[in-house]
Image (tube, rainbow, N blue to C red):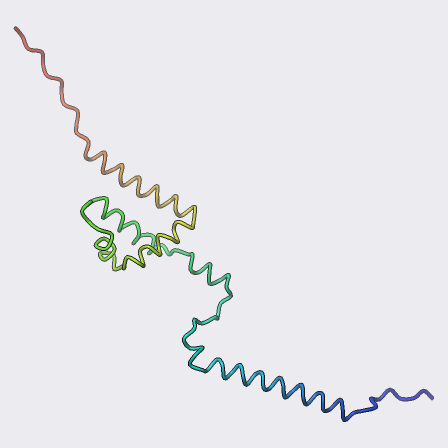
Length: 142
């Protein structure tokens, strides 16, 4: 009969498993302590992956695009308006407006769509301001 293949030192194996379990338990307890400490509460939540956060921070909602366009259109209508005044009319701070602007600039398709819309508005205003052609003066008869 072949000899049995039982571990020769079951006490050592048991001690190694207990030590591993204790280390794992200590690590979990330490992580739990860190997540509930005040120092971590001041940091941003990391419930999303970095790629998802970047995608979310780069997206511009349709409402934000409309606010952005409204600010520029207001400044096109009244050249005396400042960015602060036009943004405030849309319930935006200048920082929020500039953030939307930066995100629009990073999105090539959206940037071109916004530019076309603003150009169209500017051209409509320009056409409205053009003077109607006047009839030529009649030649003086001697």
